[in-house]
Length: 111
Image 1 (cartoon, one colour):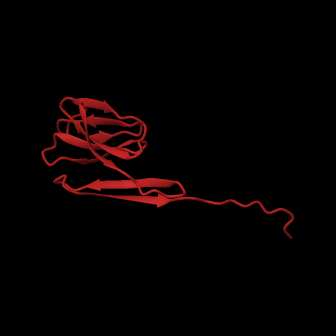
Image 2 (cartoon, one colour; image 1 turned 90 degrees about the horizontal axis):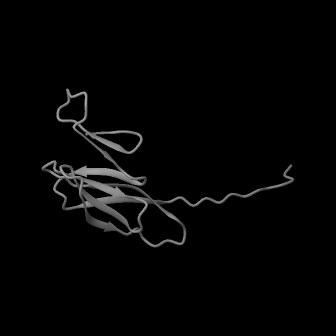
């Protein structure tokens, strides 16, 4: 499977194929994260949802089903999701997030 810059996934039967067997369009804020061991499903992380959701995307049919909801810790400042990995057996996952709050000051008449 190849992923394009415009959020499409192209599935090729073999590495020598020039034309994709299937094409899937993902929504803004969705990112593929991992395959299931049998290669039948792709985990899709939906980063714009609160809490963040992870769907199992069935390659053969294009159907989705909710796999997990991941809540980021409550913060007084905005928290940004940065990445998520899933173990090959689908039993565990890990994610990172950051607090990217910035303050900007305007100073006038500084000599």
